[in-house]
Length: 375
Image (cartoon, rainbow, N blue to C red; front, side, top):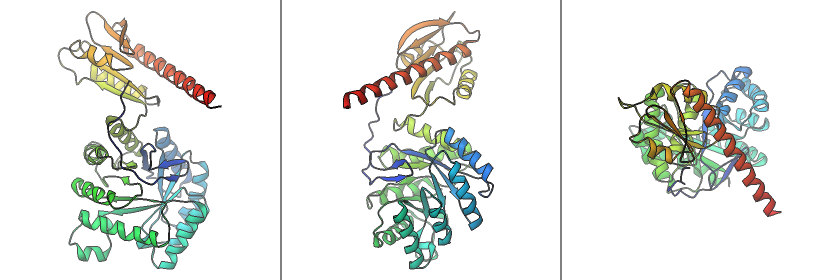
């Protein structure tokens, strides 16, 4: 029952990462990165699968050696989502994973080395339709820039990005995206704002090395939220010192909060107080755990009392308001039935799942009607 986002997104050139469109009018894609040893094919594929099941559109894999490139070949065959290979310095590794079917190369043309090496990588990407991501990071700016700028700044990040963009422009290669990441929020935001005004390519957002789960989530939500509110950003990764699956969850929560992307349930829940007629916090923890598998976009309101409960429930697909002697369940904004506190979590889960099934069935009928009318 959510309304469309009022945010007007920056116009950008669309590229394809495998079967995922990035930029243009495509939904903002969510990414994460494996932290397994790439040469351990089984572990890496297992983690990619878990990340994909959490909803990720794209996964990045570090490929630091030729041995890892050989492992990547096997990993790519088993991956359920497009893969970006993270390459630094050795252009031969980039050429090898391009041969093996990588969906995107994350490189800095400037650190590949001689012009001939860069030309070879670009030629391979052109031949196989592989886009490039220019990845600039405040922690690894080149020596020349660090001589010019005593410390990392947004200006240094932009200058580094534009130098790499110029290399691709000189080789007539427009299918790339760019990131200018920093762990300092203001620096990253200023860099993205400045770069967004100077190129037409899509931007990959991130607050790099944001921190552990709680602190990194807050820092990422603030930084990415500022940019997304301004319409800047076409794909994103939340960088956390945590399970990569958590990065995906946080990424979608940020997008859902701005009505830019729907993926699963958007919970509205009160923080609870002495007016609550059931354990709101325990209920929410249990529902989030049980319903992680649902990908159907829907709003669910769980409010502990009748002060704000009816108002929130009327705006949700499914809502529950705490009341005495029984809690009231709303469906599609209307009071539907009552439920006691005995095993009500089981009942609420079943109700939400049934509503998700109905929404999916309606969506399928709508799609069928569109197809039928176009024939």
